[in-house]
Image (cartoon, rainbow, N blue to C red; front, side, top):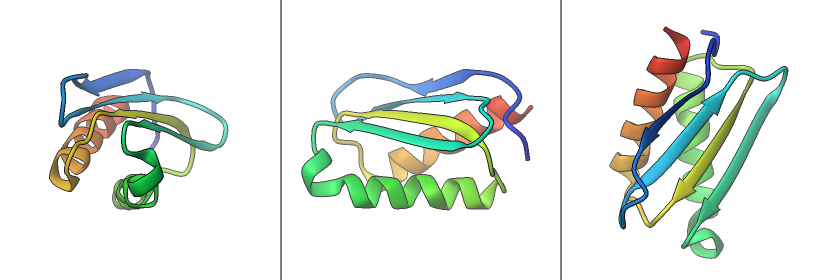
Length: 86
């Protein structure tokens, strides 16, 4: 699939995250998190799994995390990617 437009999904409340997705020539992943030192590798793995599921090869993915759990990260990414690719 291809990212066609800029979108966002989520909130900035505690235990949630905001995902920003934009078209780009190459794949860029940017993570800001209150728990970045401990969990950046797990957040990145969730992002990469979602991108693989949707066969995304290019785009800019920015995540601003406030301590979200895995299922919330997966849900916000899926929502954002479905919006961006439709």
